Amino acid sequence: MNSGKIQVSIGATTILPRGVSEHGGAVVSSQGFSVNTEPLAKEGYDTLIVSGDNECRLPSATLVDFLHRAPVHSRRIASICTGAFVLAAAGLLDGKRATTHWYHARDFKKQYPNVQLDEDRIFVVDGQVWTSAGMSAGVDLALAIVESDFGLETARMVARKLVLYQRRGGGQSQFSTLLELNARSDRVQMALTYASENLASNLSVERLAEAARLSPRQFSRVFREETGQSPAKAVERLRVEAARLMMETSRHPIEIIARETGFGDRERMRQAFLRAFGQPPQTIQRASGVAPLTNQDLLNQ
Image (cartoon, rainbow, N blue to C red; front, side, top):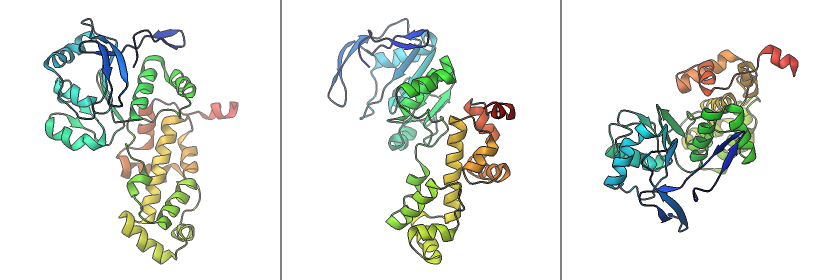
């Protein structure tokens, strides 16, 4: 945020971002730099975004009252990171789905049990209220807002200008599978890295053991001890994660995605998606808003 004099052009539309606070004036961020702000406007805003606070402090009664009335005056209310605590304190998340930074999820659930916290999600949209996890998830939220208001191609254009990969879908986990598997040894990590870089290959126990420089029997034992699951299950999780990302960020048909991520055919991928998400690939692809290429599209390329 900066002063209200910034203009952001998206196509033929100009967006005027404003940094606002309860009283206006200079506000010192948690990083020590000062942000010039305007006082809160009674008439509201098109999109009101509440930033996070490292200490998760309770907002003032004045701010709570302003936010409580915000849905009447603002088209969209959003939060980044622990800004969800502020929205919850104002009652804006009661009975709604929301998310916040995973580190603060336990405290959030204790303080606001009436909120349906999806603590693993990158961002959640429930009606006119949008919430995101921490750090880079705020960028994904912002790109999703651009996509909602101006369309997918515009969001992609913005992402390219920012030298960003196309935004992650809101349903994506805050954690990557590689991080969640939490390999402790270099050998198991070598095998996981090899698998993630060669998903379309035959990732048998023997091949992964070779990448880890262990015998197949020793590799299977060590892998399960470190990750709590079999190599085959871990490979399936890596493939599911990659396939979902392709669905949300490309127009590849399901058959091509299944082949590129090592499932081989759409039925095997469908079964894996049902195990992982409880939904088939087609449902997730439709929810992402990305229309896959048709056979005619492929012929015309």
